[in-house]
Image (tube, rainbow, N blue to C red; front, side, top):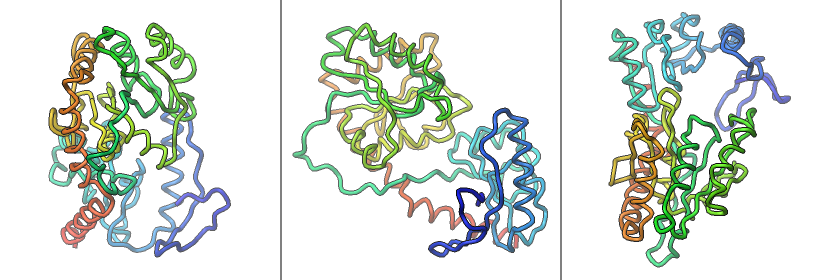
Length: 337
């Protein structure tokens, strides 16, 4: 772990032993990031204990940790690979959070194709009891929760919603909630103001809100909304789509772009809805899907898909995902032994 915030060099918490080494605040620029990562890995390498498996997300670790007593090298590939996979031939496992990223690894490093697997991120919460049939209907709200950034398709989402005819929009509202500040991963105030300007033509039907970070607040929003919109355009930015899975776990049907990372759990018309983000007119393609899904006649379909999505999300609870990781660790240890 990183040594920071006044934490001790070494500590054991609930059976987890922490060995902490000095690290760095997130630097700006790729070269600076790689330099800080190199220094951190060299420090960590000096204190690594003997192990069966060494899980790493650090760029340099697969190249610099060569002592096999430190464990079979298990590389977590949390971002779209950018050429480095061909250097990780010593890794016992290249683990991606989605099948789309696992396929990208196999294309980049054919010689390591057999070592690439997809094991997902877990939901941050247990699902809890399902909604009772007699509970109140959901609000007529299209909800976006996530970073306020152009790559998330927000310009197209606001344009699409504002472009609906009054009879198509009806009483529905679009609510956009998330961090817009650059230091929080957003695109800044200028982009936020552009979005607000796009939504002004439909008045209060489009609104923007500060982010929630608490679990209870997030779940409350997702249980209230009638549709969750996540129109990301980041072909090489999205690797899993946890926000979409969170919505599904709350019974809120998602509308997503056709990015490969969503295919592991979003099936068109069954556990979610998909629009063609590669269309020549993205906003128009999204507007057409919204018009279809917000119609009163689509309410039964939204309910069925929401219930099916919640059922599909059960496979991503912590216990199930942890079991899959432990099983894979055993396979890796057996192979390296």
